Image (tube, rainbow, N blue to C red; front, side):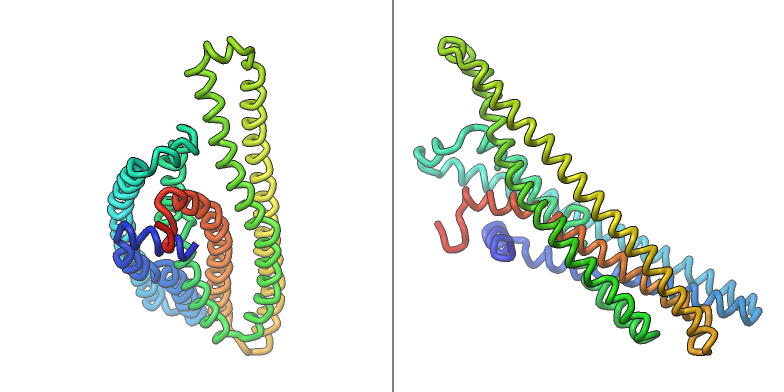
Length: 322
């Protein structure tokens, strides 16, 4: 996928702008997690000490910090929206111009439905890959969030971080094997079936007289029904795998908190932590867990939408091609 992305940016430009926007947006989720963690620690410490002025100052600082972060986040996503609108226009124009320059024999190799799928559906998938929710941008954002929150979490308590990793790592590998990889395969097959369904439907409408002459109505309708049934099964399989992934996420979230609560209680009684610091640690754990879930979901969507990017390379060629 990396080579395909470099290829499309090399042909259309905008790669440096895209990377710059990613860098500017990266800190938002991490900073939000840190703000919440520091706020809860200082708030509980102020409550324990009976410091009302300190509590009011902490709440005011929390509100101002979140307001500034909200404005910054909105500005960055506004920049992404402008980039998306320009990029999709350039991409469609580039594909259309490339299709017009192809030899007639190569154009005849694919049906009208196949070309329309690449010009519309595959372009939409590529746009989602680059700027959509839970796609490549969030994959980068979640990586930064996991790295920073893990470091801070480990600094507060290496024991709690170790326990969290023992729970989290097996879950990550299982989700990759059972959800992400099958979804990529099913998505590729569904795109091909959509092309076939479009061909059968188009033939039924445009060549109705010829089809009736040779008595091929039942054949085309049966093949159209078979492709439609596959798409229904694809959605069913996708929903089943997503449901299993969500169940594992819920089990990881609740079970992990229960275990960490027990360990944190013992550490408070032993004088190694106070309640405010433990609450802060849980916020970093929550940020680490949310970042991991975002990374897994984003990775699944990236692998799924990268199918459209690779299919478009059949039109304009790879980096080492024409």
